[in-house]
Amino acid sequence: MRELEERIRRDGVVRDGGVLKVDSFLNHQCDVALFDRMGAEWATLFKGKRVDRILTIESSGIGLACCAARHFGDVPVVFAKKAQSINLDDDLLTTTVYSFTKRREFPVIVSRRFLHQGDHVLLVDDFLANGRAMEGLIELCDKAGATVEGIAIAIEKGFQDGGGRLRRRGYDVRSLAIVTRMDAGTGTVEFA
Ligand code: 5GP
Image (cartoon, rainbow, N blue to C red; front, side):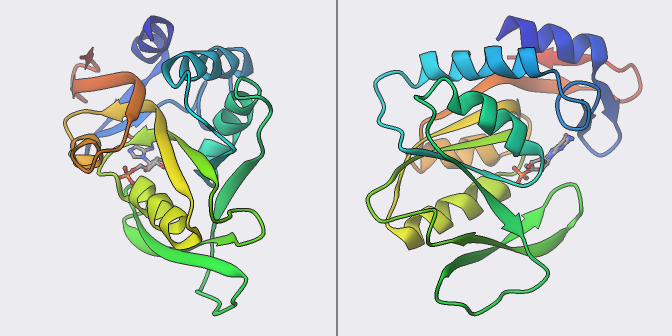
């Protein structure tokens, strides 16, 4: 999506360690009009798919998922919560996810009341790096007996292997911007 690429070039900040900072429009301050156009773009990319609900992970994915939902027939948005500890409650679907930004594992939970057997689910997130967050959400869908219809990503870092791994597993991953190379020294970002 050209508009997103241009916004990343203009306002994104490249940090050491392969981190792209986009907090002025995507995951701290939010440009909701842009989110809405991103949601419309995903709706075009996933046209014809059955989507009963959108699943994301707190916190950066929530705003994007809510804006996307308006373009998928106002389906419910569910976000997996990052928990302090795994609570062995029958009502909860649980897994653990390694966080790229926090560099540690943490439990994530979704209530069985909000993710059901037979649901057709679209996963949404702001970034795809090594794919751990999306693999965690896939596991929660598998445990629920729900089908993952697709994976909608704002920014995929194509130089990390998450997108490749998910596509090799057969998932329909659509990223609105794929960064192929970025340089913290010069601040340049290149796209696929
Ligand atoms: P993964 O699980 O695919 O390795 O990483 C994806 C998660 O880590 C996303 O939910 C996102 O919040 C965070 N993340 C990964 N790379 C970046 C990055 O370059 N910048 C920011 N702001 N977040 C990132």
